Image (cartoon, rainbow, N blue to C red; front, side, top):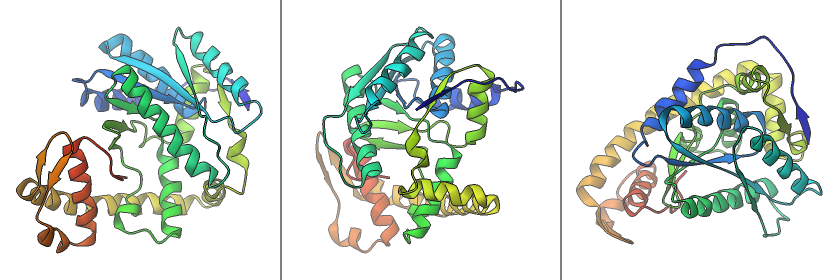
Length: 289
């Protein structure tokens, strides 16, 4: 893992700050947030932005990094990121993964990361988890889902927010290009680490990234596809919201009921949204995207 720090021409990043600030305002009633840190430029840009927001808006942010132990130097790398945040007077909690990962490494590591971050949110009584997925991640995801013959919901891409383990999983940088976040860190002289696994071609996402970097036109088309799919899916979602309000009865803490015959008559996309709506009512995640 390399540490980068270079000087380039400064830009005005107030727009990024304002966008993140507006997103977090929606959750100001629960003004404690956990920020998932990886050490890359995207997550450290988010750390910097949330630090500024905390000073201005009095929000409370906790910072956590998951060490999967997949590389010999992973503990050393995690401690180096902890040291970087300490220089900013920020405390980084390192969450150790004790599960052995041997197959489907990237997906399993991602699932474990969210599991550990979700538990950390509960520990800190934080109702929201912020992660730093950006527009390039979105395009790569749509590219891969297209290759796996995903339906409309899959092609809509990564959600800006969803319920996860009773916690709001929020992606406030999803509309930002990776290059803007890279430049943000460089202009503000924020050191960041580069994960060597980003160059391992056996991973599907790395192969997708390489193809997309060679075909910028395709990237724009995929982003458009995702936006159109999201708009169409939102129409079904609104219909489902009306249906759910009429038919789903929730009795906390863990009970929801609906008429099975009418539920099974819904279009397939509505079945998925209706299941998500039941999750929302119960405050649990039964497989939302």
